[in-house]
Image 1: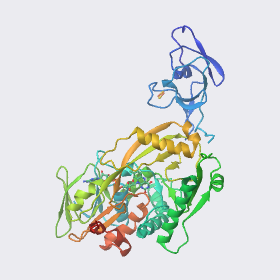
Image 2 (image 1 turned 180 degrees about the horizontal axis):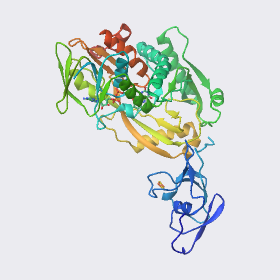
Image 3 (image 1 turned 60 degrees about the horizontal axis):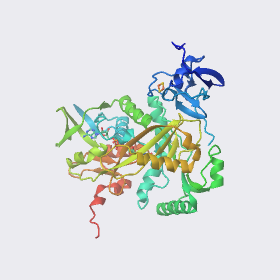
Image 4 (image 1 turned 90 degrees about the vertical axis):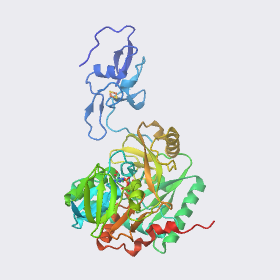
Length: 97
Length: 373
Ligand SMILES: Cc1cc2nc3c(=O)[nH]c(=O)nc-3n(C[C@H](O)[C@H](O)[C@H](O)COP(=O)(O)OP(=O)(O)OC[C@H]3O[C@@H](n4cnc5c(N)ncnc54)[C@H](O)[C@@H]3O)c2cc1C
Ligand code: FES
């Protein structure tokens, strides 16, 4: 769906559901998710419909994902780091409470 | 415009009374303010609750108890009429206890309340930690949770759905609901009341109900009733949605049908001030994590403050003006719990022109008794 317009310098690697993806230092996780097939990044808690990052500025909460084990992270507000593990989030979070 | 009854205020209290009056066949006009007003109905927690309430006021325990018992029928009728699911559940409710002292204090408090009520079977039982863990198998409680009291009459509902359903119910029964119609002036006449709203429009009715929450005091003065009222701030936190975790609502923590956890509410004497504070968020968060440590992982998505409608002893006021019969004031701080009463008992009394004797203790003259120094 989306692709980078330039070759990033000093590309790093993050993992989306275990699959390596190339990322540029300084970009948001949401940007990586938009480039990674199947392009949706979570399902909603009540109706399980598919969602992808949308507003890219922290207001719509569509971009939630599990980042390094922490669920419901707003990925448009979080920058990539080398080796980061990102998981698509399905439905409601389950608490091991 | 002439109606059988005018209700001032379309919060949970006014809307329930208006719905009940329209349901009994009266032509009802409801005059409501706007979002600039203090509106408890839009800020509350959604408990339909008995346990722990009514210390030193057995009549309030009775009223609450009866109201909770009327809720299933009230819910069934209102949701069938409007097609709105109030998400009402009544499988009981919990109040968690910390430490052995906390457990003992809770036990004594509920025992005293039970003694004040009289001889009937208690509505509650104390659950030790082991029993509580069995009841809530998905929850891992914090180390100093000693147990909980279980109230078998307790429950919860979605308060915004309740409000929407009451408004829809008023319309379905032929009532009229006007927002942005803040009442300025009440003019009592020989045939009833003429009401003037901001902007000058006038309406009249033979009966008048003042249920304008914190806006009620100045209106009540105009029918000769002096009702002392104060706001009490309550702050609530809301988390993201999670899989069903809590099997029952608890005072201070409940999980909605959609999965969010509601945490609250503070009780603060801060006047007419609806700002949220980080101190309250920290306090509520700390209390909740002490209860269930894993909740620290959750993201908070909302934080709000609302003002409770408080009388000096915190109990409701139901009164008819002696100077201008036909004018009633209905005020309380548990409008969700009492909605089933407000939709039935109170409208019946207003139609009869006389409040039943079970409501005598809720006359505001109780506040006039001079206090001993
Ligand atoms: C934080 C919090 C938690 C709560 N939790 C619970 C709970 O768990 N269970 C429970 O049972 N109760 C709870 N409550 C209490 C419950 O919300 C209130 O009892 C109920 O909403 C009160 O409703 P009301 O209609 O009296 O007042 P409001 O909801 O304040 O409504 C008053 C209405 O009158 C209108 N108005 C004011 N002045 C005028 C005027 N001059 N002319 C026309 N209209 C006017 C306003 O616009 C408003 O719509 C809680 C309250 C708070 C604040
Ligand atoms: S994309 Fe809207 S909040 Fe992240």
